[in-house]
Length: 284
Figure 1 (cartoon, rainbow, N blue to C red):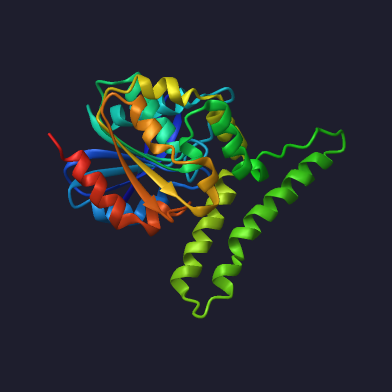
Figure 2: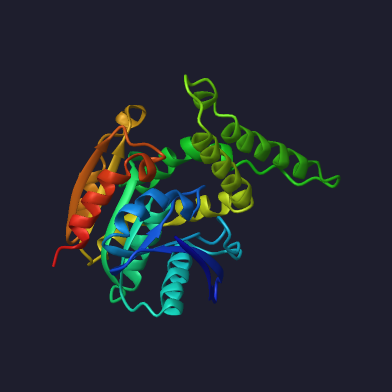
């Protein structure tokens, strides 16, 4: 995979590119980076020219400006396409990435060919109020902002909170107590910890963009043929299946459900996602 930067009005965007074929923009979840798409890019690069950017505020891209919205992140991706000389592209997005992908397809329909919208059930809840409540149960640990104090102690509290988040990734009991520990798995955790450090100042801002985004209204405006991939885990069974409702909002939608696919779906289920996405994107 190759790495490069694109200069856009919203800031410099770092991205990975791999493969040949029709352009495929791959938009990651929060709080990860484009590196989470590495396994998927290796598979889909056989048929597509994959571009995986670090969203503003993540990885090695510039931070987002104050007051930015999901629509502004979508615009930054259109500007990335402009900088690369790409007129039209397929767009695949996971969690926050599916919101940006939908905003691109709704706001710039002539630039988006087809979309793949991937998310765990909490990310796909149709009702905005219910979706925000479901997302908050997952991201509350990232939203703590302490009241400002003259002595700067609020900064120390935020620093300590972020340390807990990073250390939880660095020392993952599921890995450290496994029967066999490999260097590959440790390198994966190291990369995850680095991602958390890189985005620590932007996580709350981007999740706030998610809460303010009208996903339902946006989906109704999407004309591009779209594949919804709902990633289901037992812990979210109480939310009920949300994929069918999403498909009804889309003018041309289809659904795939992946069982036991969680936050690492684009890595752990890369072959399944690659097969379904390729089949959808290669249709005439």
